[in-house]
Length: 366
Image (cartoon, rainbow, N blue to C red; front, top):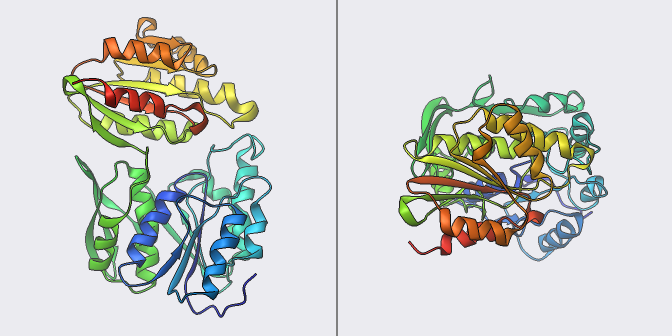
């Protein structure tokens, strides 16, 4: 590990979901005043951290902010090169559930690995709205524990959360005053990610004006809830970067809240890395979809058949569920059947390559 006096913020961000987005918000806010050494893109393995840390010897930085994967085989290796004095655990969920042991407690234990490596006079930030974050081993941390949330009591709590066409607005008590912020990303989960940046900025004495400027300039990660206009006054909600049961439910909730006067369709691919939880995870999505007023459920991938079966079992009309054996078959269907005045959510794990479907929809002639 590089020897360095702990005179600058050293921020480590991990969690089951939202690491890249949270990092983007934190970096954008801090960069309104400081020179920040950040992760490249969403590269978050120990070998990438080792390479980035070397830059501390070559240039002077005011802060460091790294996204950290806590996947099997990498967990403590990060801390051979980097020791945070501010740590963020965004959530504890079902992402990479198979490699994490198919057990939520095992996942929480893995995310907790960052805690003993965090400076005891530093800060640990967790999500008060995430019920599984209660399983994190925070009692061993001797520093300042900070919570963020919307629904539950928290050190930094967002209120007046409003969906807008170009993102979200919300209010937070900041330095004793109620301040309103805006992010150009959809979903309450992205408000949560922004709250981590707001909390860190407050503790590092950034002004509300600087926070607003940073949040506005934050780069939106690709293929994460991106809206595009299609033919027939329809819209694509592209969330094809990755998927797990928790994130699919979040995306469906957002689908139902945007463009309320339009019909809603889901186009889903397989959720990977779920291990023995694969059937159960896909069936949980089917049950969840059955309770939504969807105009259609389109599925492609071997495991997505469980989604369709469970949706029908729970009362969703059978004639509105279609399963496709290949992407080519699905694309042919969409080319001939894109509905008017509708919103199409496309989502699946990165390995399921549902981005092909998103690209196909964008290319259809209007």
